[in-house]
Length: 411
Ligand SMILES: *Cc1c(COP(=O)(O)O)cnc(C)c1O
Image (cartoon, rainbow, N blue to C red; front, side):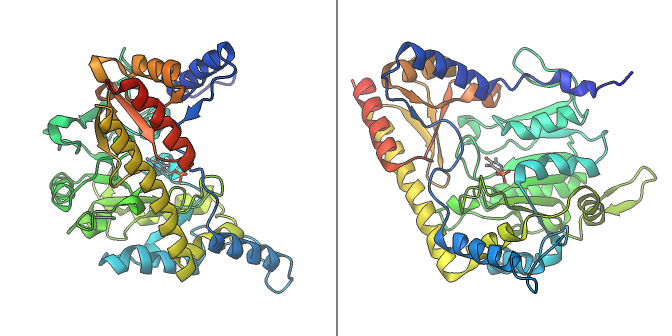
């Protein structure tokens, strides 16, 4: 008789987004004429930059030319894309990262989960609270946790609260943890980490032999020049950090799929016999066996992000979303709400008024303003009493949603 991976039975049944959909559908059925605006899901809305589309169109032509046609590409990604990334995203910021340490993939979401393939099941794992749910669920699937409690917290994981008490930066644990997930600029809170904060993390990781998984999916949204874009801007990070990056949010590739993971060759972890093993070798082996690379066409599109035209168009795209964020922050503040984030990230983290729970505020916004956001409690127990509003939308939708909220909440 075939058996299943029983760890899947521990998963909380994808509670957040299905529950949002259920409540929105119920409301929409009862109020078919209500013009609902969705500021909930973390997906981009604006078209792909022209430079990327042109590069992809040219790449399609290459595929129709016997001389230029490409079959299987390198599992690690084409050298020209890895070189462009190494030069522009890392070396230009003073990060000592070589193209050979960059692995191209079809998404950071996949890589965040896949990376667990090369780590043991005996690691102590820390996540922030609130957190991007992928980090937690992939550890549950891998068998790295116990069961969930009432609040959805899994046994065996160390939860590090991100709250007003620590200015929305992740609390450095007092105990020893082996693997740590950090995401800055943060989804869902929009919070950022200073160089000093990341230095404290790197120092902690080096002192304990821990590995940091640094998710920099939102680095392009940083406006404050003093903030680090990469963990490799921090002294010592080559010895303790893996960085995940994606073209999803900066260049609008959520539907196109291209991302990268950086595994420095200086990174090691312990084998059962006590020896130090290079993580680069394991990840290279893992990718070569289980992955066959990203489409040539898509990699050409990603390469165009680093062209002069591509850089200007991505900058404009980010500027557009950040203007949305600025409007959201200003309007909600004027309406008397307490807001965080939205300055170096496309997410605004709103304190619910009058002590409302995250879900009560969700219902109130939906019923009174026909606006959909994301309840903070869906990202973890410490998110209770908060609400995420996304800047990924058209200007008209953002302005209309803010008009309705201000009308409702401004006394
Ligand atoms: C959107 C997002 C990503 C990017 O995921 P892809 O699979 O590359 O689209 C990674 N991390 C976080 C926290 C995100 O919100």
